[in-house]
Length: 472
Image (tube, rainbow, N blue to C red; front, side, top):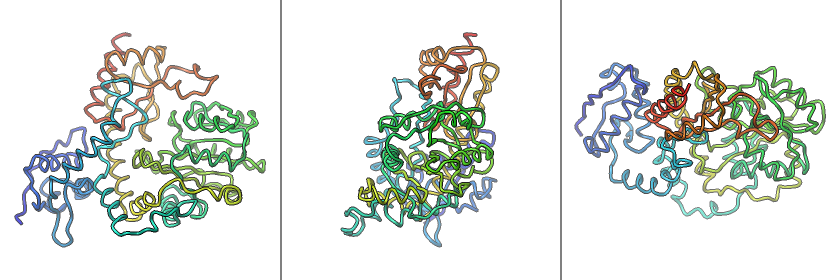
């Protein structure tokens, strides 16, 4: 097979990273039919030398193309273009059944800065399909049986290994419970802790968790925050014996809790036997400056932290798979009282995720998405420079949204309405506040950027500048 030469126009000063420019160009050539099935591409080293970029840049581009099923790597032969008809068929099927529904904007806005969105255009569909086929390739009737109540042992061990290396969580696989979504896990946790518990939550907070716990009969106590997170003195005053916190990246404020405040919370929990901390580590994978923040659970030496995690943000919401890491005293309660509950995630889905984790696909996907989200994050911050005189920008360098707080006293309602007039949807911080503190503090709106393209981000901010600045 003849080796093709790729003349890729790169813009060193463009908003998109170099690897993404290379990836988009080759993807476009394949989709248009210019690069046909079986064509051999240059090696990453050769392409890097021709384009005057680092080899890691070309490798990232090829990795993305392989993950999406546009090319394949054959041992000792090189990189080759895959058959396009299969990709078109798969893409049509997926868009019709899943992506189009996911991308519907709330309220019909043209540009929706939803803080709940994620980027599904870069989901490794073909890799996920390959792993699914591998799971079902044999007539394994055992796969269709109930399985372990806590989740498959192999998957729990894979999760344990990932949490230890990436988040500094110290636990055994036996302490992990796999479940279908955080709502189910919170329901399970409320039964483990005992009905009627008083649970403190940061305010503002993740309202879905608040609503679920309140509906389960827990007595909810909102606790104000300072710049370091939940105030321990205010927590003590509530009389609560459980505190629900998000120390690595608080939602929605973006606060990263420093180690001194973490130690204060651990000391608070240690002062009474039945006190616990629930650590919700929902999006710690996405941090764009400095090293990842270790989990609070890793500092716990006395079994006071219940760790919660999910794959909804890092993979896709429809995965509906999360997990609890229980301290040993609560694990014993679970096994005695609730060990008869069947696992709510099918063994097939667990096996798919197990392969995705252990064969390196998850790590490569995270690395790729960090780079993509960082590009969008940097694009948004760059575009927002025009609003710096009128707004304080907070919550940057981590997560998938940022906060804009008005310096001119404009109401949150006014900011949202003026944006809507120009086809842009933004979200008020007050919607995440628990009753009693809903209207306090300066007007703040949230801008999520995960599911938007850089072009949409640029256009959205341009419209916001017209809506908000021109009125001053």
